[in-house]
Amino acid sequence: AEEEAKLRKFNFTRILNQDTRTKTVNLLGEIESTPAILIAEKTAFNVVGPHLTKFSHDLHLPKVSLTGRNDIYHWFLASQSSDYGEVKLTLIFPATETHIRKYTHQQLRMVVETPEIYKGLVKPYVEGKRGNGRLDWVYNILEHKAEKESIIAEDTDDEEGFILLPDLKWDRKTMASMYTMAVVRRRDITSIRDLKKKHVPWLKHLRRRIPEAICQKYSDIEPDQIKIYTHYQPSYYHFHLHAVSISHDGGLGQTTGKATLLGNLISWLESLGGDEETGLEGVELTYFLGEESELWQGVFKEINGKGKG
Ligand code: M7G
Image (cartoon, rainbow, N blue to C red; front, side, top):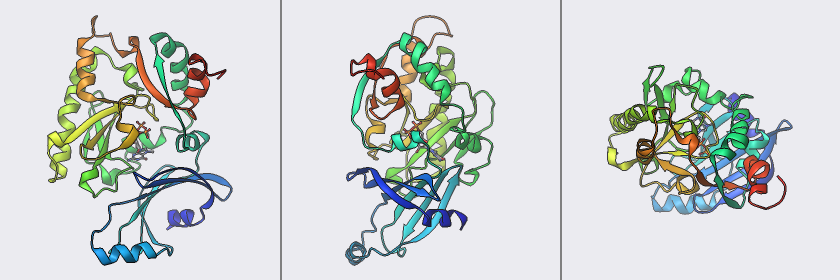
């Protein structure tokens, strides 16, 4: 009820972005003068005809129920009655400048990150993004302080362990859009840049365990209907994997230039020359960035010849 009261106080400022294909809208507002982001997403429509027509004429304030909470992230389901399609709401409060940039509509740019650029300019930025409570939601999961009831599988080994749980993007019931993530226990890997040949057996263990655990929990999906991938750049610099239904069109987060399949990552590492300490810190990575991102504005804008960062 405390969370719902917060949600009700949301005071709309402006639209950051909207996507008609994914049926999402990102709203910026304030709750008691502090920035807040509200992401609304239509969930799958209940296909019973008359309800759909009525729903489209019905714009009254919906009934809201809290489905989960972790740190500054809250998620709700809003509906008039269970007969209608629901709207999934994600509230980020208090929202930081980085959140506002992330959810703002923006142009994208391809960038080439050489090992030298990584070491000299990107790595210091990444280190700076691990503090200030930005990873608190991840540590809450690992320490069972939040989302404990949602855990799909847990491996408590200090070196190889992980927690598999539903991603906040998932409504947690539509199997066609199943969206989970595996957060690793170890805290020393910020992104794929820190992966080395010696991590291959561990990554293979994850590749086997994750689909196994998902299929044990949900009977409607099979191992070869799940794709496991990682992002570069990620938004959060604590190593994690996305495990998603292949039938789900997840937009930009699943395209080349952002996502790498775990299987390909493993063979990439295996094919590197050198000893077990050799890793992806030494390769050139090509990917895209949003023009609102700090990495674009602070590093790559100038490198790409688009003016000073
Ligand atoms: P990412 O690749 O770092 O960034 O993935 P992205 O958001 O640009 O894809 C982080 C993933 O963690 C995303 O898929 C988020 O939806 C998910 N996520 C973020 N937060 C804050 C939470 C949370 O509090 N709980 C859960 N379950 N998932 C989250």
